Image (cartoon, rainbow, N blue to C red; front, side, top):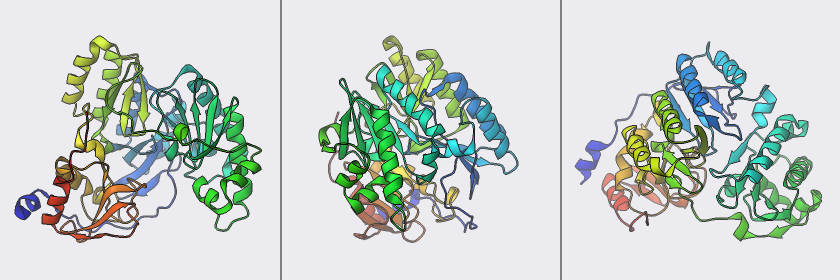
Length: 421
């Protein structure tokens, strides 16, 4: 067992140089990584058209991009840009309307959208997007501060946001800090503005300043937060939390999800997604928080052909594909914090993952690929030969021990089925 699994594990890479890092890169403010310059594109509320995705992929490739990463924040990383061409790529995205008009507006436009939207929720999201691009007070918010909009038919992203709106049949639930505390309102964007203002005002009195709303809520209490915002606070876990939603294959509302293995795509794959959207839907595409492209308005009669063609392009359409429950960081291919080829390790271990929940493979204790607690987190302890194990924890949590290859194989194959149809 040890020899067989060991033969399939990727070899360690050589040492990587150190690079300056520490901010949230945008298309205007790329960050230097081990594989070149990294820029982040934030999709608009309306999503992308097929033509825009074709243009994005072709332009990025022309300027040196080697691959694209679908992030857990619903954004698209463009990796491998050249120093000289990165500004030209940013200018092209701005000219095409795929980025905000200026650096500050793009920096604060952190808006996560659920895959399905109603006309009401999309209208609210457009109003919120306009405010995010124009409100000066938002410059005081931390770089990772996020907003989210979901419809009642597609909840579940509230936990990933600092302030979220869930639009329901009558009114909206506006929540802070992951969805536990919130307020019912018929004016959701006004409530969001009030909560953002309360965060800025209350955070000023704490050093170091809180970086997320959950942190501030723990410091001052949610009652104090909502009082500062002039809002009545309620607890409503049913509205704020939801069971995991399907992310690939046939989805509600004439949508179809295309999963990307471990969130890593090539320009060729982006062109394939755009072509599938043109052939089998309205040509509109959203980027889901579960590292999947969502095709909108897909015709029911086209679904069998769409599934076949997607599989040929190495896209995931089966909800029980174990790769959907494995998160992996860039590893030694693009990060100086590790020498392990984490992506190759993920491809090796994913077919063995039989337990429920998420398997998180992290090259170091930062846990960039999955900042939440995972069922099992593995951090290579010695270039991939043994692993630090963490259970129901983030990568920076308290280790439960160290695993050899034999132990690892047994762990991944046990604990029952991970997908229930």
